[in-house]
Image 1 (cartoon, rainbow, N blue to C red):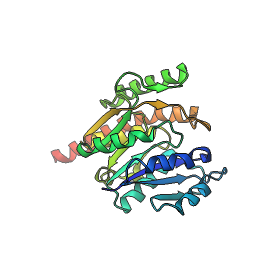
Image 2: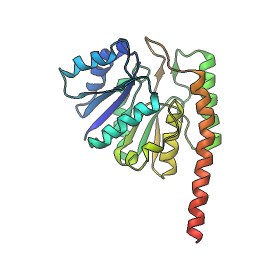
Image 3: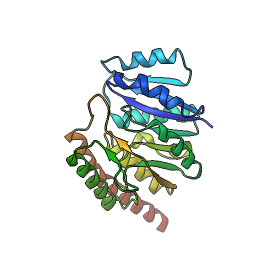
Image 4: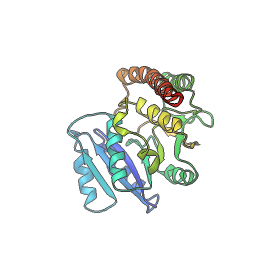
Length: 245
């Protein structure tokens, strides 16, 4: 079994040196891919130094700040090409605990997508201001209503896919690039008839550095949920029309 943890980075030099060893020590089957968007703080250089000491560390360097979604797409394509069995998403800021990786890998044995959920058993978020927590809960409910997906945490970014699931999705046709990317990937997996399971995690606000959340990201998520619903209905109607002919 080979598993790849994809970690997008932009100015995460304060975190990656500590995070990567914590990820790798969870299981010998795990490797790490850092997808860095030309961080001016030298994140990529730190990763390059770590790569000299451990062959389980990999790096994709991009020309500039190109967005979360496209970073994961680049990582997915790398993982598919290299034939990893399981592909995981993880934040660089320790908001996702490396200790939870074995739980994701255990659950993926009987599922196609496993989501580390903040809301499957109550609210498991630490150190968020009330306003941000309320926004996140409202967003999750909004997504469930519009898309009909039976997920408690459709916007979460701590996940594990089977490779064949990613191979079934046209990654070049993904609409989203911000945090709505997580919603869109979940939606495509769900619409594809794959088995999705949520398992509980405790989400902790980043220890150092700055959050990448912005009003633009929120607006994109609000709009793209409707795009997903519209395009899904459009293609379903086209499919039904072809079937009747």
